[in-house]
Length: 71
Image (cartoon, rainbow, N blue to C red; front, side, top):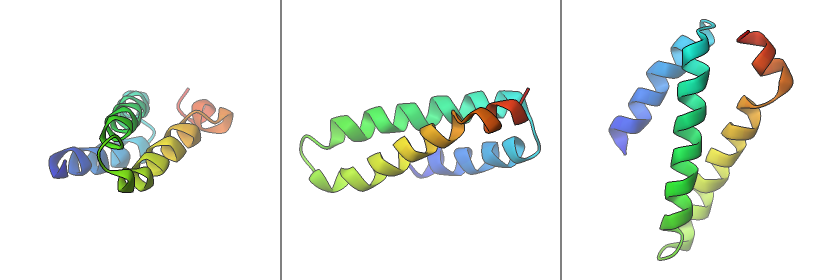
């Protein structure tokens, strides 16, 4: 999980620089993490916090102005 987070931080740096592939990578990463958190909530209700952060990141990445930035 730590490696995943560190990779997401590096990719976010590329996204900040305006690389379109980084937007796609971050979107796939946030959706994948949300799905894993959703499965993790079965045995651990504390996973709602990271789940909500992943959902928020996905929603923010899909906003029209963010998509326009990467076009």
